[in-house]
Amino acid sequence: MIPQTNNLEIRAVKGKEIAEKFGAVTRLDETCYKVASQRTREIYQIDSTERGWICNCPDQKYRGVKCKHIWAVEYSFQIRRLVKKEVVIEPINVSNCPKCKSDQIVKHGIRHNKYGDIQRFSCKNCANRFTINLGFERMKHNPKAITSAMQLYFGGESLRHTRDSLKLLGTDVCYQTIHKWIKKYISLMENYTDKLQPQVGNAWRTDELYVKVRGNMKYLFALMDDETRFWISQQVSETKGTSDVKPMFREGQRIAGKNPTSIISDGAPNFAEATRNVFHVRRLPQDEQTKHIRDITFDGERHNNKMERMNGEVRDREKTFRGLKSMESPVFKGFQIYHNYIKGHMAHKDEKTPAEMAGIVVNGENKWKTLIENASRQ
Image (cartoon, rainbow, N blue to C red; front, side, top):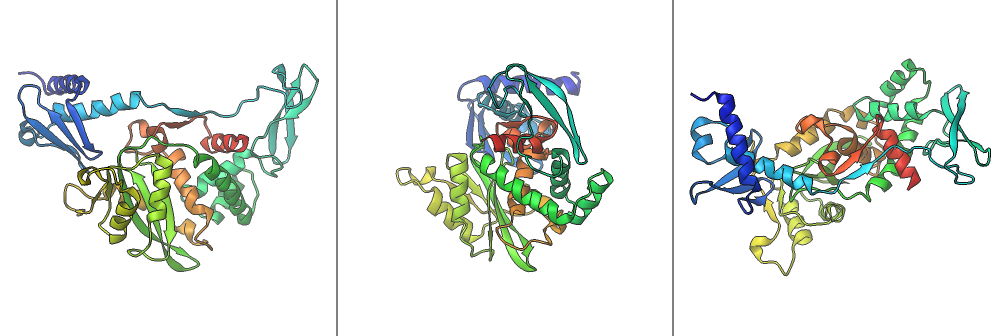
């Protein structure tokens, strides 16, 4: 008898062969695929569920194993990602003198002050001495303290707890200053990341959750890509089922540079109306228009639990929202940046961020600093 591990390896090999065959894997949308049988004319359907991919072939139906057709779908993902053009955002390195533009520069000691140390440089060509602190010029505190505060806050700490944590690290700052940092740098990064186009899939999910602004109930609507879990767009509204979410859909359309093939929601009528009004293309027949999938249940195979998980990230940090004074607060956009570019997702291999899955790679040990530097240079 062939060991089970070898059987799994055989299925993986056969799945790869299917994926490499032209036309064998057909994508209906990001949650549903058709895969042709290798031996017969049978066509099997593979659906995405919260338990993973399921196939209606006998191998999975009777043995409950990961069949070769599911392997084929997963390999098709890998093939598709290989042709994606990645955007790599690197930390800013000093390479030219700001005065004479010469590349003949060397390190020339450290400038010390009570808030931290800054590397000093010297130009061999013009003897100019200078420091590079891109994005943090004229700031009283060093970049490490500022980015640590943002990591703590969007990681779930309140402004006052963030202040207390920074104090243990040797940075004495009031919580109002931390809020000013958040307001300044989230606005800076928003203008930069808004110009980056993620390579998202064709099935998007949408939902809303309540937040309190000045003690009053408001609703945060979000649009997320099903495959990469990239948070595409958002809006804050006064009401739930009657809010006009067309602006959020149009922003998602602009950021992604395309229309989705399907919008998955909890079935609220405002989502269906926005899908028809924003994504409808007159020249396309009805069966090729963007579909609004509304048959979502908690115990069925197709539901909106992926979106609920992202909402749960926000709910877990609701204490950071207690001091919100305005529906235009930068905190909402800041959490979107944190979700997309900073926080690794357990559902992705090697806990990649949604941005990395969408072809936008932020390098450097301190991703906050990398984004701020590049945003300042732009």
